[in-house]
Image 1 (tube, helix red, strand yellow):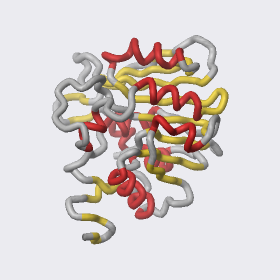
Image 2: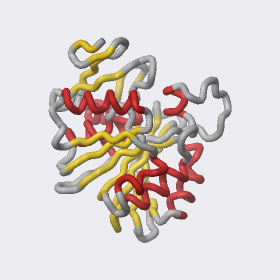
Image 3: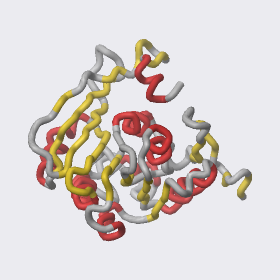
Image 4: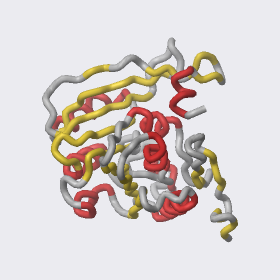
Length: 246
């Protein structure tokens, strides 16, 4: 049943940007803070094109359209139900001329779009390697969190192929895989250039890392000042409020 473009079990969430909204289904997978932080970290300049690999319900392309002067945004998503929600969200926000959602496999991305097709690649890939603790390999939340349908190597390899020379790569991931991430990026010719750690509280260890890479870039990376999420329990820092647009 569709009501106001929503199917049974779906909800409409406001994004606090340009009046945009997004369709989500709590039974599948809802976007988290990591996607929002990536949209604040990534830079898409005027007249540039960007693709988001594993876009889910389209949160990153929609936020990047709102926050940047990029010319066009593409989202690639393998799960048809998530891609359908993303397409309907794009239509609800009247962004069909700026955002395209494509259903397809990240492992085939360069075949689908062609080599050197984008100025920018963004991705919020599955964080967990292997199959530890899995209950159902076909369940949407499992696919989003675990490397069931693609690996870190798949994501970085296809990103390198999709990027134009000197194109930029932006990813959010977990710090415990940082050594592997940097090795894989350099292996495929994406030089790490900028990194920011995200801490839940000032006295905690970081639980996210934001990374920018440059295809064919020279060695040399800048580590930016850390991003602290909470001042105290339930209260965001000013920087988080700014990223969210509150």
